[in-house]
Length: 208
View 1 (cartoon, one colour):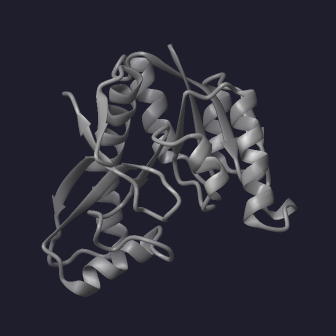
View 2 (view 1 turned 30 degrees about the vertical axis):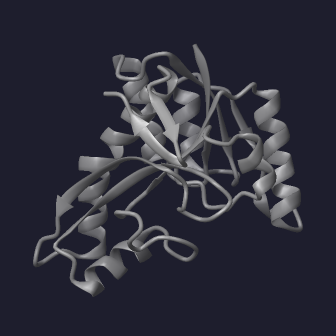
């Protein structure tokens, strides 16, 4: 059984999707053993408490730079014996000291079809504003491994939704979360925990 540590910063809707998936048996071979938040008072912590999942708070604002913060996160991950790290609305880019130590063991969800509308500065509603501004006809989400560059790690799974003529960033965000993120993130986690993701030439291949 692999130890899954989830990093959060906000409301924790993707965390809730993972908790529900674990309870229903969708996630096989792994268990959420700790939730770490970069902010005190994040509602994601309440979700963890309700499910009796241990929590830790490592406030980003208490550290002078990304490197010192990343070292604190790395120490916590080692202490929690993390086999898999999931970024679920975690709003801090981690230094490569973490991504090197946990290469191909950190999964993130990005609310667009990478390589479109991704990288530094593309997060939250900004992603959907950019997609709508460009006039795309489909959008979606990407589940990928995390490396030293923002949103540049190997893609594990992708899913799409249609973009509707009257969409706002908020409606598009909601449709992608409900139809793609909350389904594919638990699926990717389960595949990882069952050792069903292979890496070849820097690309990820899932055995479904």
